[in-house]
Every structure is written in structure tokens, then in C-alpha cells.
Length: 221
Image 1 (tube, helix red, strand yellow):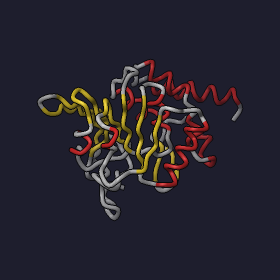
Image 2 (cartoon, one colour; image 1 turned 45 degrees about the vertical axis):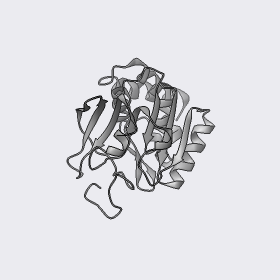
Image 3 (cartoon, helix red, strand yellow; image 1 turned 90 degrees about the vertical axis):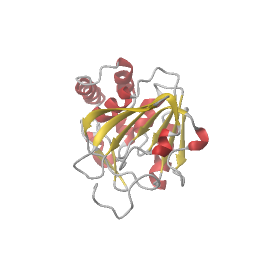
Image 4 (spheres, helix red, strand yellow; image 1 turned 120 degrees about the horizontal axis):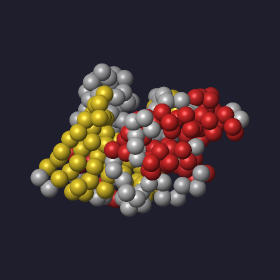
């Protein structure tokens, strides 16, 4: 892809995302972070299309529209300490890094975690800490967080993650027990409990490990 065609593809991606996402800071971050650097060479020509793409190990990089929607829904102002559950390729973390103070990102798949860390380092992203997923969902040692983004579908809103969220903080995550009933939720922790808003139906790979689905559960595949 020539530089001119690449620039055109980026602007078309941002234009399509901008039909739904109105936060200019989010759109600028998506314009500036090179999505093609986060996908395998074999699918790089599709990097700026509005579709999810395979990144190996049965995982995907979310379509740009979903990345933009989730980021906007977190209502970030630049000062937040953020947790991402599911580093994947590192693309969502790189977007967040341009919009917040710092990001802690956890990933259960070792090869993806290592590749994401290398990509982020190569691109000069210094405010993201990539960690292996532990026995407990999230990264409680670094809590509390102002916002949490979960990039794989959970069977329900995880109490463990809600406990790592500050009062007033937002968690954005897909929830659903089957492939055809997933919803993207924004969950706000309040002094009285939680408030939940749905952003509509989505399709994500399943969250595995603590707080997620069993490895042999194919109902969400």
C-alpha cells in the first residue's frame, strides 16, 4: 500500500467511525495510531477496513467502530488510570494511551502478550504496562481504576472487576452467555451500587480464565 493510499484508507476509517463516535479526541487517536502495525502481515491490506481481523491464537482485533465506541463510552478526560482486560494485539491499549494518564493491560495468551508489548515499545508507547493475566480477573494490585475496558465477552458483569473500579468510574464490556445474545454495556459504579446502559448487540471472542468461560465451552464461539 502506497503512503497516499494508506492516508486515504485511514481517513475513510475515521470517517466511518465518526458517523457514530463524536468525541474528537477519540477520532484523533484513531487517526494517529497505526492500526496496520497491530495486525499480521497477511491481513495488513485490510487493516483500515471496518471489520475484526484475526491476530492468531483464535483471537481478533476488534473492528474500528467498536474500538471507537468503547473508548468514547469510557468518557475519558486525560487524567485516568485505566485497566484493559484482554491486551490482544495492543491496539486498544495504544488508543487509550493517547487519551489517559496510564494503562494497565492484562493478557492470558503469552504469545499475544509478548507481541503486543514489542509493538507498543517499537511505537514508543511508554504509558502502557502489559501484564500476564493472573488467577484473579483484572490486576487488583494496581487498583483502583478510573475506567476498565474488557475486550472479550464475559458471561455476566464480573464483581471482581467492579471491586477494582473507583466510585464514579466506568467499565465498558460485552456481556452474554451465548454467541447471539451479547450486549455492549457501560457500567458505572456509584455509591449506591451500579448503573448500566446498553450500547447494543455485539460479537466478541469469549473471555477465558478467571471470571470468564471454561476452555471447552463453545456456546460463545
